[in-house]
Image 1 (spheres, one colour):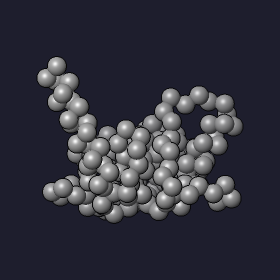
Image 2 (cartoon, rainbow, N blue to C red; image 1 turned 45 degrees about the vertical axis):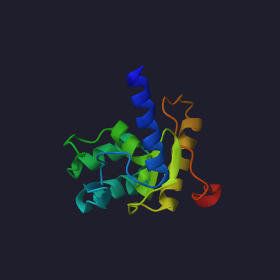
Image 3 (spheres, rainbow, N blue to C red; image 1 turned 120 degrees about the vertical axis):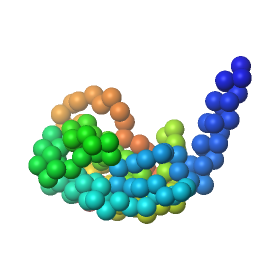
Length: 155
């Protein structure tokens, strides 16, 4: 009973933090935590930007992971890029400067690494590829907030 009450309070506090644009994560690739905010780590942000740029060119997660490996990029904990880790990077709304918590998306109080336009273009390609090849995705791409508009003629 005591644990359930504590868990409910923590969840409620995290929802409030996300709504206010405060941090709901302890670390994230491309950013360094300074107190209660995130600042861009340029070396890691270069990896994130490169992954988005190369995906727009190649439209292939495995190919992008190979290119990132060739350039020597590594994750926050030193792991080499894989198709899955590239997918995770490409589907994180946080790189546009938004907070997420349990599917809710709110504007964050930290700088964006990529533009909303690039993010939207990548999401459209990811969604389209899933439809073209008939794959069943385990993870769904988060719903974009009304502030980010997805337009089909971007491609």
